[in-house]
Amino acid sequence: MSSSLNLHPFELQPSMFELRKGEAFVLECVFKPPDDRLFEQEMIIVCDNCATVEVKLIGQGQLARVEY
Image (cartoon, rainbow, N blue to C red; front, side, top):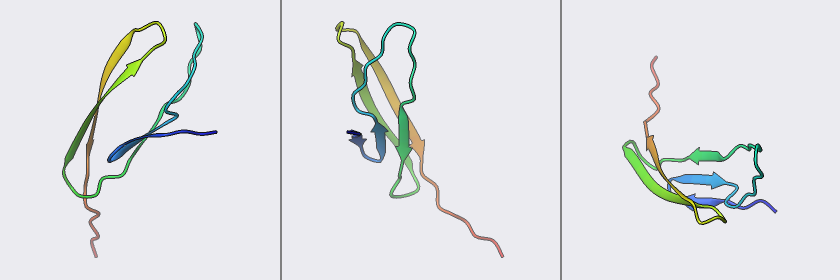
C-alpha cells in the first residue's frame, strides 16, 4: 500500500517509512502549484526514538511562456 502526505501544493510519498541503521531511501516530493507565486509549507518528521526534524518546503510556481 502506497501512502502520501498532502501539504498543498506539495505531495510527499511515502508518508510513513522505516529505516534501519545504514539504510537510505527516496522521499518523493511532487510540486503542483495552482498559480505563479512562492509557496512554503513546514513539516516535522518524527522518529520512533522521539527525535524530530523540522523541514521547510519551498517552491516557486511559474506560468508557461510560449514564444513564436
